[in-house]
Image (cartoon, rainbow, N blue to C red; front, side, top):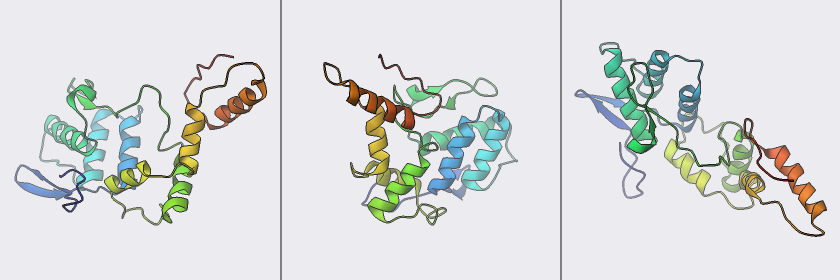
Length: 196
């Protein structure tokens, strides 16, 4: 599987012990995969089997769970371009499992901000993401997400979340307005450490 390089076509083929599989790299499939990886209620063996089925349409039942875990881990690492230092060491037998890369302070969430992302893709690119399910490649989706204009709803929401509260005399009204916006657009499970 190659990097996103405009000089070459996207290569979604992967070889496992001499057999070639096509990866399902549709953005909606990868978003569901992220949901699967982050779901704390799903046991690791189910995650491995389900994840393999999602990615290569095969659960590789001819392999031991340890080997399947190694293959799945390798695929995830490649898809998300995860370096060794980004990995948290926990899974069924203590083998390392990938951790989604995170900023120190999360400014967006692909699931919680889905409505803003949808509206921004429609506004900036004329792309209906529902119509693109199963078609738009994950790497293309990421590139388009990163290229949204400053005026897009998604980037305006991020700007509100990261905006500093104004200080000083005569700024109380503006401070309250921004605090209200931050409350409206804050991510779930995220505490605001803003001082009054």
